Length: 355
Image 1 (cartoon, one colour):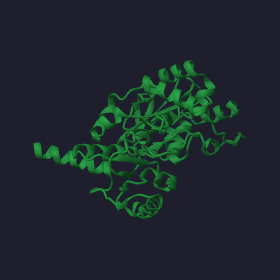
Image 2: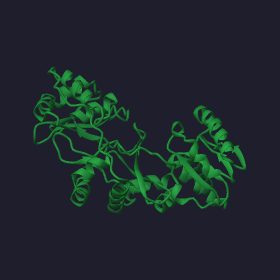
Image 3: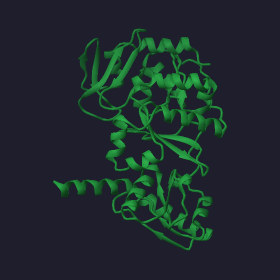
């Protein structure tokens, strides 16, 4: 267990909003109620949108009106310095102690969440998606990307904004218990409690399923371009291509990068009435030659992003697909950088033509 007393003392020392803004180098600082508001360094705006104010317990709460960030002083330091607040907690506390001119407390090493059986994780993720369907600003974001139909068909969901997430976490805790919540990697228990979602700003819920339809991992995405844009639960890496559960065995097999590109190319192919099985790789660095087996006896297209990493990876995929027995292997470059951008560009062109 972390020493709550020493960590809390650091939080309490860093409890003056204006002094904290100064030592963090925040810019465009203005008075805002009993606290301050400043330009947010997390999403890089120049006008004040990041609020720093004292909570009832006397510690700082930071909240940005321009991006999904919200959290205590340690979360703020982690976000600004580029740390993972869970995995790099000791480094975050050390940085905070240095800023507060206090000794660095001795803390235990990071402990990975215990691995849950696939069936248990699937039950928890299915429950979460039932409680948090695709709606609100997340639905508008997905629809704006042109993949709303595909996302709904695949059962995507939406976390509410941070301040409304507590009820959702409590429902999961009541139904599944703390051990499952901890083991899922979806939630964390901060020193000052209560349970909350890890990286609460990543609000798009994207289920990655196995061939049997069970949810193996629950990827999440931010609505803005803050980093990291995509996260997976600790202990539940994306270990299979996206779209395995929907393989129909009709037409060629097309390999793209990620869930958004997979949905985008499905939409493009549906419009042109071209049947194909589309698989989204969890990352071009994560390619496994075993995934080439899905193209055995079929035509295969390597439709990775039109950039240098995509070109390098395409050579590897083409080699493995040929070795696995694909009938033909061809490189298919998206007209734009990737298929999600290609679909968005097509939508923009259609809107311009109708105006």
